[in-house]
Length: 210
Image 1 (cartoon, rainbow, N blue to C red):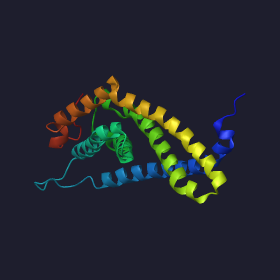
Image 2: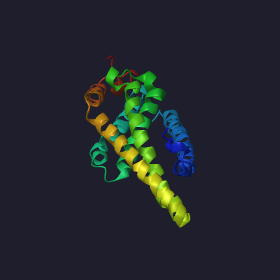
Image 3: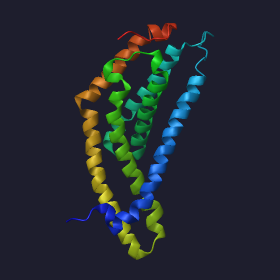
């Protein structure tokens, strides 16, 4: 029976890196929630005319910011030359989901734009990003510090992770080019345009009744 990667010497050599990534993911999730909650507490901000924003207006502002931040990274991410595009898109997707959980009571989004439809995208982006972090940790932190004999094990682990990354990137590319993602973007674009001139913009709290 073929031995699983996790039970090999190479796999065991990667465990420390994987554990570190796990703590990082949990910590950044807490940061996202705290940041959005902190912003919501300051939701009584004033507009340029000196009037206070309604919760609906503020929700519109937060959602618009994270949505535009998300789509801005698409082209660079698909080129796969700079990992920062993936990082920023993942952050924007997670913050958008968090924003919908925190201020979602103030708006009514069309179904394709609701938080549950972001979940699959968040998952594939997260898988790819975690692999990038693991590879970078092994290459830049662990590999230079271990003896030459152990470096070969690290190199084998990196090679294995690159294969996983190729598969993960293919999933991300598929997610960003499939019809469901196109529907999600179209829903957000239409909702942002319509709600800017209806409930969210005039302070009635609920943006629009889709």
